[in-house]
Amino acid sequence: MTKKKIAILTGGGDCPGLNAVIRGVVISAVVQRGWEVLGIRDGFDGLVGEPRYVRLEVANVRGILSRGGTILGTSNRGNPFSFPIRKGDVMEMQDVSAQVVENIRALGIDALVAVGGDGTLKIGKRLCELGVPVVGVPKTIDNDLRGTDVTFGYNTAVGIVTEALDRLLTTAESHHRVIVVEVMGRNAGWIALESGIAGGADVILIPEIPFQIDKVCESLRLRRRIGRKFSLVVVAEGAHAIAGERIVQATAQENLGIERLGGIGEAVSRQLSTALDIETRVVVLGHVQRGGTPAHFDRILSSRFGVHAVRLIEKGQFGRMVALRGRSVVSVDIDAAVASLNLVDPQGDLIAVAEELGINMGR
Image 1 (cartoon, rainbow, N blue to C red):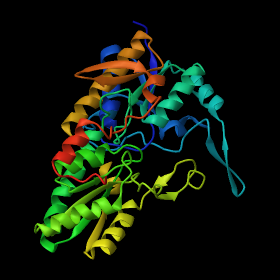
Image 2: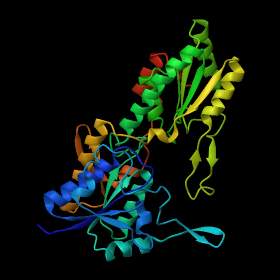
Image 3: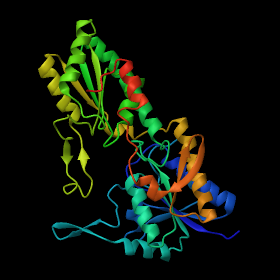
């Protein structure tokens, strides 16, 4: 068997399970095949300029299966095709992909495992077109990659939000309040929908169903008429009213290429408080959804993805992404995986179940 030198990087936002992928790749490549593995620091940033990396041995990944985050670091702004370069007082976006390709070749890397979401995988595919052998591993707590049934990190995030809702329910009931909980979900409302159902939410607002605030108010008024003086409202950060747009804290131009959302929970809370003359509170869970120990499902899925990524490299199948289909891990073309987002179907069964359970979806 020909000895290979491969590299792995983690890009985009961190999430539980990243370290389990790294561990899976290292054990499968180093122990089972005798290959060499380099860990690239801070996503694609680590391949710009002087390369930043660490040689990964089994000792490096011992004990990291249960750790959140990523031992390699990550960046959600490190797009080598549009990389921020400071020129005096001005930040310019430049294409430094040729530099990345040259660094990969200079390091003698035979294949690159790119672990990330939509953005990271699109970068990986473009590098593959430039001659870099890339295998993708899907990661996003939003679960919005269509090429796989589920992404690792999502299961843990839903569990974290559900636990938060369980805790908030008791304080909402005690104080007779409406508590609005803002969760992550830029374009896809999976976290809000599934945690909302699991956590007994009364209202769930997601990006796929532009909401009517009067419908929400009507639902909460009915609850109060029947003696239910408290309510939980779960709002995805990308949710917006029919007549409005999602709330942006910083545009892509202002935030080095990444649009930052947030504030819809506060906006909904104000409207409910004014319309219903009730006391409301807002809880923004934010990055707590990304952190901490991965659930057992994500540990197993991440480990499987890491091992299967090495198998793809061994077979010379590049430009592919590992994916879960049913109970099996398969591979799909990265292009197909990122061609469109995996969004909640407003007419789908899960929405129908939520509404039949009495959950108002803002429509």
